[in-house]
Length: 80
Image (cartoon, rainbow, N blue to C red; front, side, top):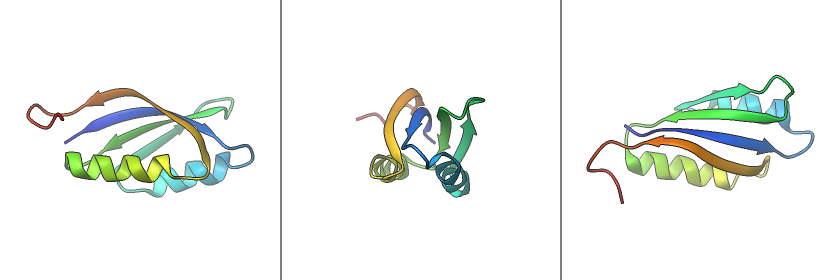
């Protein structure tokens, strides 16, 4: 099961809404920074396909201005 962490920059005025939205998404744990500048997002998905689907959703979220992966642990045999 792929486990990844991301640093998420939020569109101005959308911090609380996005934090709640990400926290409610299955396989996601959202951790807001103390200054509410960024969100650290940890994802845990059952398969590489599900990880790709979730990342696609994140990239297309209009409340996210920038998303950068900071860690990925994809089990052996599941790499591209």
